[in-house]
Structure formats: structure tokens, C-alpha cells
Length: 422
Image 1: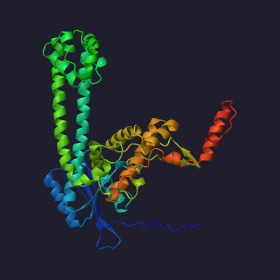
Image 2: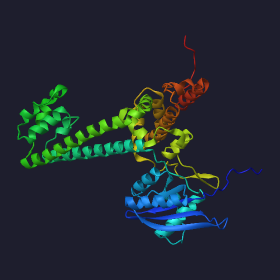
Image 3: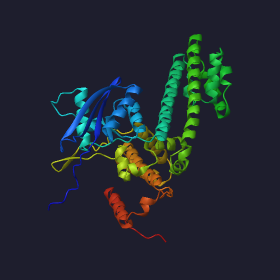
Image 4: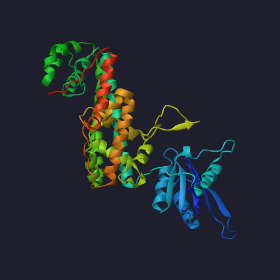
């Protein structure tokens, strides 16, 4: 039975495509030919990417009556062009280069790329990427920079630990947190010239004092002035990065203030703290109209297994693909944190991990978290309610569970007789 298709080709009357480089860009604009109905005029020009030239580009596109401007995501070069044209009132689309594949055998130049992009765009054969509004973009810059700072501090801590190992100082074997209060005090004393392991061990605080004999052994090595110089630089660098992180955190809190109600609702989800809520809002925004359903959000974030089918058979391993790495990172952390709780998400993780492994469980719980996030951000009146760790158990057929347990015991060689408890 034939069904009516909903696809109707609609040509965008006035459109422009940009092929952007670092120093220049090529703009192809296509508009209707007023003298010859049904025909189209095309203009291809090259513009420097300096601000004055980009302003001239915006004025030229406005004079041509262009309504939509499409560009590929080329490194970070697209950002100033996108922001300037957006400020001039154009409908600007950023598209993934993967969606604008070039035809095999077609010559490739900057001008031909711009023309090709413009023709594909006017026939609406591509879709725009998600570019959040300016307040979310600024918040995103801060949260992503915070991730980089944390990674930088972690790398410097690892260098310091390797340096101590080089000096036969086995402090990390005894101390769980090398950069805690006690560990920092001992390293500061080493940098200051103290070499006596008994004196260094006495710097231990709180419960670590129970390990003073072990600390004396760990602090006996060949720590030299050379090690002290390098360790001093590393500690200074770590402290500077930690101070930068605190400043960035304060800035994030200030930028997050307009979205405080949304962040508060997200923090109700198990495993989500203040930093995670800020990262989620920075990566997906608070306007869920961009994602019509939770499945659209999960698909965009690449937390939905891909489907590849040929000749009636599914192929591949059902991998999700590579999505937003900052969002994937925080969702993975949330899923692992939720797995330790006695909640619905924790039980969901444990059930899947037993059957499919930890990695698939993280993806599955991450998708569930995205679904919850979508509903919380779509409806300002919605609140989170945990279904409970016994959600699955309470909905399992009792008779079927009984039969399964009997079969398992019989398979082990037992004869099973059931009696109701008094």
C-alpha cells in the first residue's frame, strides 16, 4: 500500500554559503533572477576575516536580501564570523562537515566548496548544529576551561609524585592523598631543607599519626637540592592552578545565576552536584525546544546505540559514536556516582552491569539521566522523584521468578519442594 510522503522540496530563495579559513573566507550567495523567473543568480567573493571586512560581508548579504547563511565548523575560525553575522540579524547555520560530503571525483577548491555548500543549503539537504545563545556560550567557555585546569593540576601532581619516587620518597604508598594537609606539610619541609625522616613524620595530622612508623620508612630516601628545586616549582604551579580554579568557580557561579532554578532541579538527581549541573546547562542549555523529544537529546549526545541494518540483519556492535566529550565525561561521572546509591539509577546500573558490563551500564544510565534532564528542563514545574531501588523487583512476575529459581536449583542437582512461610 502506497503512503503519502511528507517530504516536499522547498528552495530557500536567498541563501549564502561560506567556506572559512583562518585569513580569508569565500562567500557564495544565490538569489532569484528577477528578470528570468525560475532562474537563479550566483555571486562568489573572497573576503578577509578581519572585522571590517566581515562587516562589509554582512552589508553585502543584507543588500542581496540573504536570509540564511550556512558555514562549516572549521576549527575555531567559524566563531567570529558566526557571532558577527548573528548580531546583524541573519539566520546563521553551523553545519557539520561530515554532513556535507563532497562528491567523488569533483574538483575541490575554496570557491567550489562555497558554491557546493550554498546549493546544498538552498535545497535544505543539511541540518544545523546546536549553537547555544551567548549567555550559555560564556558559561560553556568557563566550564570547559575549568576541565582543562583540573587536568593541568592533575598532570602536575603526577609529575611531583614521580619526582618523589625518583628520590626514593615513598610517601604516596602510606598517604592516601599525597596533596592533603599532611602530605603538603611534609613536601614543604623537604623543599625547605628538612631531611630527617623522624622530624618529617611528626608533621602527620589526625588519623595519619597512627602510621608514623611507616612514614619514617617512606620518608627515608636520597632527596637532594635538585629534587627540592623541581618539587618547589611543581608545588607552586599546582597552587597557582588551584587558585585559578577557585576564581573560575566563582565566575561560573555568577554566570549560572540566571539559570539557578534549572540548576537546582538538576541537583535533585542522584550524582549531580553544583559543578555537574553547571556543565550540563553549559553544554545543552535550558531551552529544550531544540530537542523535540528526550530521544533527540540522547541521539545528539551520542548516548543512543546506532542502528546499521543490511539484508535484514543488524551489523556492527551498536556503538554510540563520538559526541560531546565534555557532556559525556560529566554523564559518566554522574552514572558512576549514582551506581553507589540505593536508588532507581543505582539499581539500573547494577542490573545492566551484571549482564552487559560496566561500560554499557554507564551509557544506559547516562541515557536515563538525559531523559530525566530533558523533562526537568522542559517543564519548569516538574520535580525529580526517585522510583526507588525496588522498582524492578516490584514489577517482576512472582510466579516467573519462582520458576526461574527452581530451574536453577534443579540444574545444580537439587530437588525443590516449596512450602509457604507461616
